[in-house]
Image (cartoon, rainbow, N blue to C red; front, top):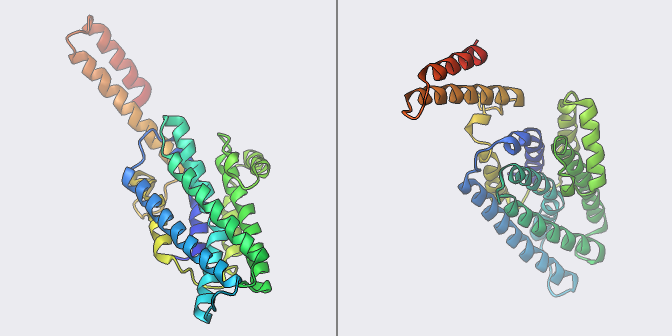
Length: 285
């Protein structure tokens, strides 16, 4: 999986993240572990590659053309990896706040590692002779673009609850959140098309960690759960999810009233029957 695909996944996670945040269900532990393990392995690979680039900058070794292309592809992964890391950390933290969980700690730890790798990469771009000036300029433009989109996607998640701390520039993320509150979701399809267009031609080289990128993406997607997908495999809209959740809650309420009628501790069978009939008329008509 290419790094640009993870940026698009971040946009999808931002769009449907409120479903995860609002859910009262525990997130599947294997999915969180998959995101953790894939991200940690990728951070380890990045660390070794960055050390190799640092050694090259001191003239300790020579880099082949294949190694140079792999290194630049890795740097593209690093400078854009913030987008998904920030969005997913915001989603899991929002879920924790609603459910008193601790899954967000996993994503925040990965985000810290991501930021450390990015800082090391940017230091190499500024001080290293192993990255040519045109490549360094391209990577810096890609970084700025990724930061702006990170703030927009985190801003979308911050409409109902302030998660702007996960933006590259929290103040800008809050501004985007205000814009979304005013404009609603009408502009989302246009924004998503703009994001895809912005990054479609921004990557010059294949991603060297495509296998781990795919593992990370699988861990994120699996956290949405099957109830978020419709029969065609597409993510279900938020209003449909709310409607189905309301119907489920109503059915559970009615079932509980029937159960009360069978409970020997119910003091008045007539009162229980009256209550049951009232709720059935109120919620099932």
